[in-house]
Image 1 (cartoon, rainbow, N blue to C red):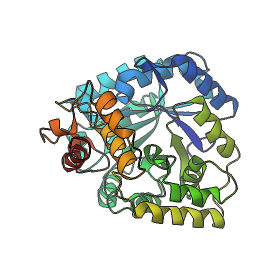
Image 2: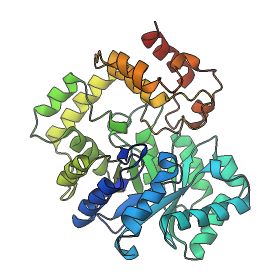
Image 3: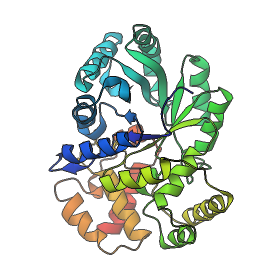
Image 4: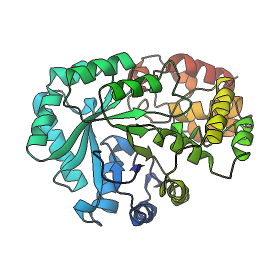
Length: 368
């Protein structure tokens, strides 16, 4: 076991916000509760929350706790380097921003068939291995968003990879596009420990349709998040499950069932299977709101928010979504119909969604 901590990690991509800045005081309270309950694993990346995540980690964790008391993961993202020398410079800048002299884990970020050649071309894996030899990284890994076939190729090319961060949740496990289950099996084949991201699928497995809620409500009173996170944590070889918590309430709920973790029992597994059946009958856009798509949008379209509005209106019958679409998410940003179909968003999307076509559906729903 690489990760010497409990099986639950603090994902710092969806921190609570206040006036477009991270709500530092609330994050400090969340960190304190997290650490007090014996959890120590924090996950960040330079691009999270528009560059604010690493800074928040420094202020709320690094500046307040002994370095040996927590585990910190950061990532090398392809948009921040265009040469071999860029990689070292970027890495050193990340250390500086986070206020540390080493990362416990350093991951090649969002590896897929499109960006993997760039990491190869600029010797990213070799350079990161050199940084490990210098003591600036303890463990090298990847986060991954593609097919099992691509993962097989990367793990074969780079046996030095020590851990794989995968999207794994009960809806995506058998999904033919995300291939969570098949990717997990590849990790098992290569004997690579797994860190799970998106266990609640960007909140979709908390904000359930009524039919799914009734299924879980018939159990023993656990939160909807508890069934999703415990599902992911119950697999052999899964050493850490990340939760992108954005409130102290969410933190307390997650800790309540992960402090003394128990895998799903047979009755709970059967309920999860029935909920999966409910989701398969819905016409939802499977966006996880990672927001990778928004940075390069020339029309400044808040794509995940528009998809959320669409799901809420078409699946959950939320009549108020017209207001949110017009007065909140497109008041100062582009509308779905403003899309010029450049394709930047689809290149960045870890879910491989046909965003340009989906935006047309959104426009047809809200811009009649």
